[in-house]
Length: 161
Ligand code: HEM
Image (cartoon, rainbow, N blue to C red; front, side, top):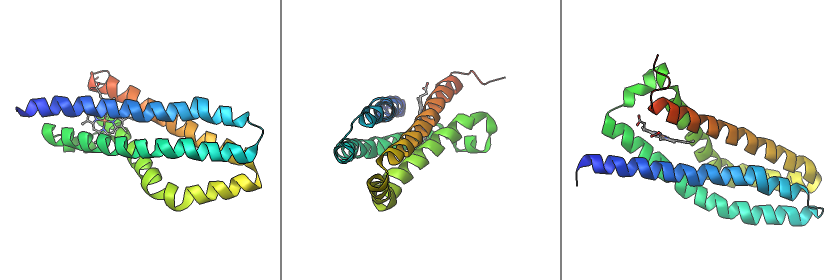
């Protein structure tokens, strides 16, 4: 197969992975956490959150890997690594930053620190723990959406002055 076919496939896979990933983050942020907030039983609330988010975290790990692999493959195919040295490609820096943050959270911080921390916090003050969790998700979702907006606009020439 011609190389440009692999490039097209990589780009399509990249976007599908991003849709699954950021779509999931949006669901957790705008629907799941606010619904849990309305549940009276604080113990049940955390059990439910851990079961649902735990499942999503597995899916998120896979799509994060696919996003990174396809993204770096595209950079290699286009021989575009020097874009990291050019400010007009700020959206590439943002994509890489968002990817690094999620990779760190999903593969290192969540299993080693965050899971235990939040459990402990939830037993002390469940409402505070949930509010903090919500704020963190809102920040990550906002950054991700700015990244998608900036990338699509940037790739299609909106920031070429
Ligand atoms: C290691 C991380 C990443 C790398 C190296 C990377 C790299 C790339 C590259 C090289 C392109 C094609 C650019 C072009 O055609 O000029 C692209 C497209 C795209 N990326 Fe990423 N990316 C990464 C992570 C992300 C993340 C985290 C998001 C979303 C939050 C994202 C969203 C997109 C979108 C939506 C496109 C399609 C733009 C379009 O064709 O209109 N990427 N990425």
